[in-house]
Length: 197
Image (cartoon, helix red, strand yellow):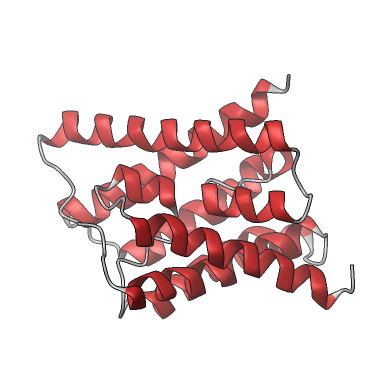
């Protein structure tokens, strides 16, 4: 078993969730989309070579759908991602005594928005996985694609694009779960199809 991969996913998702939680709850003077994109980009550089730096169950499922990760690894990734998010929520609440102010979305448009945003994120992750992005630019491409996805989704949803982070910031609803999963699967397949593979 390659436990270092799972530890990387837990640590990365913990950090990403904590950053988003602090930003939306305590009004940290740095825009949440930028903070999330920067965090994801940094983890692509620091642990991308270990786990691929998914930090997102939807991305993991997208990669599984195109056979870029084994089923047992995908299951463990998702378990560790959710555990990291819950740990971040617990730590943040202990430190601040507050709960994240977000609530889950209920409209179809919010689910579609989450799917579209996650599409672009998974499209970028798949490009990096296929080595169609220079390693030196991988963090910029993946982090930038998260930022793009968030800005597209934000007018219609919480623009979380990540079921684990949604769990950690008190916005764990059907649209935040299934929207990103559908979008990530479509994004992974779209990028794969462009190469005819």
